[in-house]
Image (tube, rainbow, N blue to C red; front, side, top):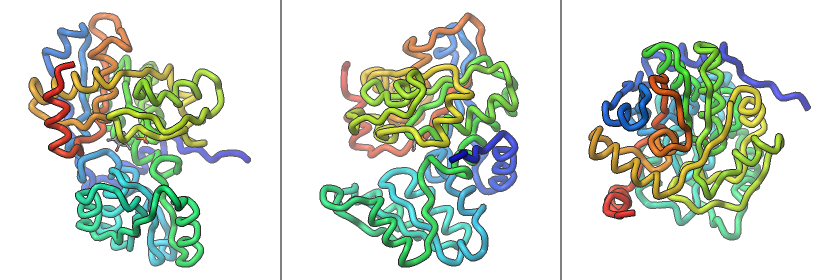
Length: 324
Ligand SMILES: *Cc1c(COP(=O)(O)O)cnc(C)c1O
């Protein structure tokens, strides 16, 4: 089967669709970060995106790209994280009914936030029921369209608009660092980077404990791992997608990893120095440059995507109080 992959043109189309709907999030700099690394770092602050993470971009682009019949039947998604809220909010804005499948034991705050955006939340038992089978059964019954969190043409194109805006705002980059779960953000941002700044080297960053993407990249085939343990809860995927892997193989220079201790250091850095809350997964790319997983020549221009800021405040306080 040949895969139909999005291109830079699809990222450009997504940015038209998102114009006036998604926030054009700020690009922030820090003298401390620059002097620590010798580079010029540009942080793209998607923690300030609508619903608190870049996932709004892909979710909205995917629903906006449906035809009238598909829109009338509604959209189904399974997620307990940012993708759920992205689909719920996008459905609300576009007048499309959304149903989100969530595990019964998902945090009450996440369920409430998703319902607050107008989605219907259906819960399942993650120990006895397969969400894929459940989704398939519901889809057959209702004709709803499933929008997956990363391995989807319009989701990837939408996520790429984050890097497109970054490069439009600051100019060409030598390096771009992007966190990786299923690889939708990385794939889309790599398309944008290669389109607008062809010499830019793009790197993916994963938690050390969940380096399926690194293994896949280096072995040249998708490697599946057991659910990893890391505080980067947005990057606990077991494998890359078919589309995301194909784009990553073609456009990305390498995949790097960082430890949870480095993520905590980075969260503290953002709180203390830059006065902002970045969730653990959102710190992956920044941790790679701040803690030396990627070393760059002095004066290099480095883009870093901060993917989101949704973290339970009690958990956040716990991270900040760790001394490691
Ligand atoms: C989903 C998510 C990721 C991972 O994105 P992928 O497209 O699955 O690689 C990273 N950070 C945050 C905050 C997320 O919500």
